[in-house]
Length: 112
Image (cartoon, rainbow, N blue to C red; front, side, top):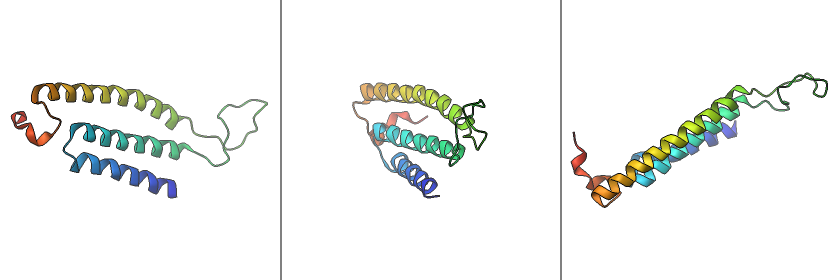
């Protein structure tokens, strides 16, 4: 139970970075922290105490198995998250080249 609370605290730290920071790089880091807390939560959902690998053979006894589905989902989400963070960083670099700052308060021309 304490690990789920720690996941929530980690998510709230990332949310703080997204909502209250004005630097684009800090906002991207906050999004990454939120993403990692979700990954940790999904892995904790699939964990079974005393569980073994989900392979049925003569070497492994038929006991509680660890659920492999959240692990596979997290691996897929890590790849997607990496591409998303690369895109966000490239947009931040382009904005820095155009405006000369990472501060979002000074980027007034973004209004639609």
